[in-house]
Length: 433
Ligand code: COA
Ligand code: AMP
Ligand code: ZN
Image 1 (cartoon, rainbow, N blue to C red):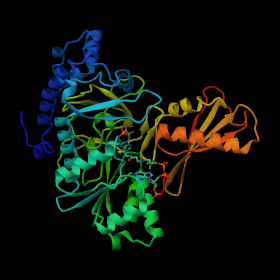
Image 2 (tube, helix red, strand yellow):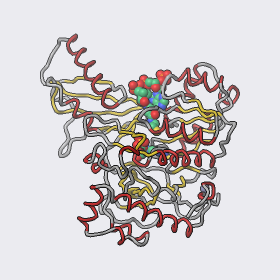
Image 3 (cartoon, rainbow, N blue to C red):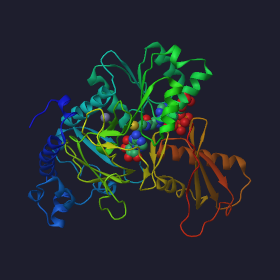
Image 4 (spheres, rainbow, N blue to C red):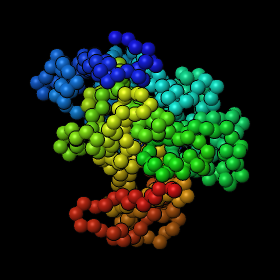
């Protein structure tokens, strides 16, 4: 079965589901090239032929991030490694990181998916697309880069940081569309105000792509007003390639998840049973258009729901609601995913420190800030030594989590103690509206 890419957007449900089943069967065959999935199937007493309908998917066990870690680095490759042309990896160096592998076809399909998203919100050849995402391993960098190029836009790979330079680029290159995480969009506006740039008067910006971190409808509207743009929510994750998984259409009411690429399920994170239609649960995705590293029933840990009803835009691909949170303890700061265990592991390597620590997240103006308070084993008034210890801890933490935290060394016993399970993270961030 072959459809032109553009036709994929408007397939009927019946056509979509027929395509999904065909691609699922191909995917499962490919998965059998991996020891991991072969033994998983064997352990459950199923063979690929047992999956005859989309409903049979539930017979397959879930795949988790831990499975990816256990098979680090290339254990989930379903093609010979000589066919793999790129890998992306999660940042964690303390815990084993995860690796996602891509063939050239995977990269082409990924670029097509991102191009489809950008086209859906009206971007075209002639637009100037600036990307303020980190490049390298951050999939928002190369992911948007190739998608925007595929669409034929002039691209400005500005990458993260250096806000004054971002603003200069926006003005000098006539940037019309920008990809930025919501908190960074607010930061851009803040600096524009400081330097007397009025985005509506002084720039050609009309479209903003925001994603990578949870944000509210109010936050989106505020950003739209501040920058004089339409802002569209974009959802993705490295395990599913990166951006291009689900994206808002011009209706701005839920993100169409591209069902010719993914089969979507929403399950109860505790029972792992499907939730009733329209209810919030954990998003589970199966890749059906990937060669190098297909994933079956991957538990994303993101909490959301499928919006009921049809979208007035005419696309039949289901719509995901805004992400409501996570079913694990992952934090997202400055567009970077961080697990408390990464911080704990670093802190525990310092002999001078106790095991008690507290991570507090705040947002001053538009900047996320992480403060790590940790108890010292022994009282000391040797301030130069304490200063150099603090610097060393910051340095090691930044290496691990990629952002710069504030570190406070506090006397033993001074952090609040809770009964039962210790609370290690306080998220005091407020929505910037
Ligand atoms: N995107 C773009 N720029 C960002 C940013 C983000 N998510 N988060 C912070 N910045 C900017 C800051 O505004 C600052 O620039 P400015 O002072 O000129 O305004 C600069 O980056 C450094 O930020 P700071 O908070 O001082 O440093 P840090 O060491 O804590 O953070 C970063 C380091 C910015 C490199 C790191 O947070 C990063 O790479 N973030 C991007 C992650 C990303 O792209 N995620 C999307 C994946 S799809
Ligand atoms: P990464 O693998 O680094 O791309 O991070 C993926 C994670 O970022 C997802 O699992 C979500 O938790 C979060 N994320 C991505 N896009 C969004 C979005 N639009 N809204 C809320 N969270 C998002
Ligand atoms: Zn729509």
